[in-house]
Length: 70
Image (cartoon, rainbow, N blue to C red; front, top):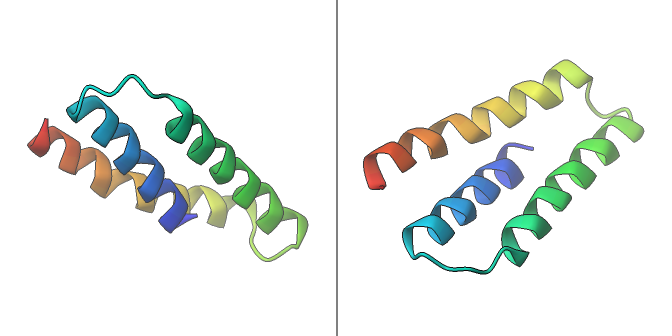
């Protein structure tokens, strides 16, 4: 979750920075984040709390980087 959510936020920030009008990568990565989370829950590899924590840990550095970058 950490890696997928970090990549998703980075691609969204890159689209904003480069002013690209291509929403397909962002939508695809958001979909992949959801599929990753649901598969981890279905396989009982993690609890919902661990999934949420991984999502937050992956998103926070990217959001902080966006404030410095944009």
